[in-house]
Amino acid sequence: MKRPLFTRLAAALLVVLFLCSQVISQNWFAALRLDTTQDQDYTLSANTRAVLGDIQQPLELRLYLSRDALTEDPVMRSFSKRVADLLSVYASQARGQIKLTLIDPKPFSAAEDEALKAGLTPIPGPNPDDAAAFLGLVVKSPYGRDVVLPLLDPREAASLEFHLTRAVVKLQEAKPTRVAMLTSLPWLVTSDPQSGGLRPVAEVAQLLTQETDFSLLSPDFQAVPSGIDVLILAQPEALTDAQQFVLDQYVLSGGKLLIFLDPASTVSRDGGGGLEQGSQALGRLTQAWGVSVQGDVIADRTFALPVQTGLAGRNAIAPQPLIFRVPASGLNQDQAITSGLSQGVHVATPGEVVPLGQTSTRFTPLLTSSTDTMRLEAQRALSGISPQDVELSWQSSGQRQILAAEVQGTWTTAFPAGNPRDQNASTLKTSTRPGQILIFGDVDLLADSLYIDDTGAVADNARLLLNSVDYLAGKTQLLSLRSKTPRPRNLVEVERLRQAAQARILEEEQALENRLALAEARLKEIETSEALEGVIASDVTDKERAQVRQDVQEARTRLRAVQEGVREGVAGIKTRLMLIPGIVIPALILLAGLVVQMLRRRQAKKVAA
Picture (cartoon, rainbow, N blue to C red):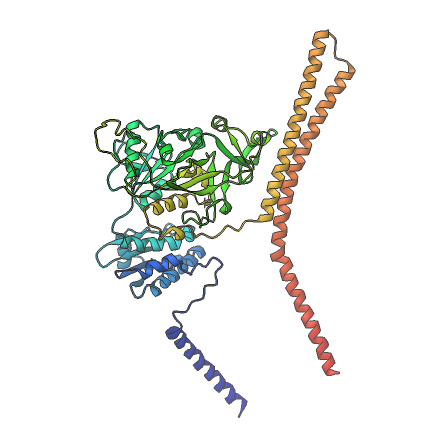
């Protein structure tokens, strides 16, 4: 066969094989998917698959995606593709109960009018004259109920599956979870004087208003509204006997409680307002429920978070044991509320939660400290004590402390004599059915300042609250989804060096302060002696003063050298980390290629010879 003819036939055969492979892949292998992403972004969790398999009515997912407008932004382009791909996975696993419709709302089109009418949020273009873009979702049911996600934000990519599944679940719910809160904290949630409704202030309160039917209980409440699924007590003012009785009867009748009692609220102290010390606000109730929050504060040196502090007259960063992060090792991995919180939980000046030994209840720890802990009086913790002062007085207990727990079981009334306001009224003496109480020894964990920075949430405090509410309400489908976030990939060696250096700085500062104290005492002793004896300073005392000043200057110089060493060490590690993938690895690949080429040439020479 002639070579040109063979070439043409081979090319034609390749084209036919390519077309056949496309037809086969789209018809036979369309449902086969391989998720190679590190965080399994396209693999649905078991809970999501269970939700999709239990859909009782057909749903339509309308994704409004402005393809042309989002193409110029690489972040939005990549994220919008991920959204569309993930929704196609939802449709493929819903047993035909989900129809996915992709809509491109071009400017001045009927689709754009439809997107605006549905309540989607337009994304402005980079230039004033650019048309707005859309990336939002409308979930429609055949009975006229809709759930709208106005804007799918790439900054919330880690929670994408949760938001999508939550939208599907909402259309399956008969009613939303009803949540009421009693609190003294205006930085958490407060009443709006103009509208008379509530005004959520903290992020967690805003999330509660979005996720649940949320209301605020008046400080002078006389009853718990009927139909409340979960009652939250967040650092309430001290309750009267009548109010304690109302809560006593609520729990005995099967009501679910989520309690935050803090022996020392740093957010309230720092101007947030509200009760600073609230561990005893519930009076006799905690004794009846078999659990208590201690009045002392727990400090944790192992889990301490870095804070800004004064160090030898300079601003510096040092670990503060009174403000610490409870990592995965301190979270109960057997409990649905805490098992998936990969970013940990930040707490500040918390109290220990202790069981009181009641046999009718089961006590399950949720948050636990490390073993390197120490107790401080609440007033001292609220005095603004520095990390250095905490370190100087450190005496480790060597024991783990429980910072949050679940209490389950049955209870006996805290008011055996009956209703304090009407002792002839009929009251419950024991639980009508087993109950649940979640109790935390910290309320500051609900504050934005403790876990949110300019980049967003750096800990799972908000997820912990929402998980607790869903758990108490019996809606456990979304617990693992809410906690499905990529695990932070920290520069471990950099953090290790930084922490070791901070410890060295504290040691140097302690030595400096000791030398300063000794020097000042010696100078005072010399001046007192001279004043009593009425003598003029001698050359000896002048030399001693000069020596003391020189010692102080040398100590300060050493401290600056330690701080400079920290910066140089961290910068050196970061430089090496950039050199390895940028220069070393390509150089090794090039070297390997040269070696292979040399070996081939040698082999060729041998064959030729």
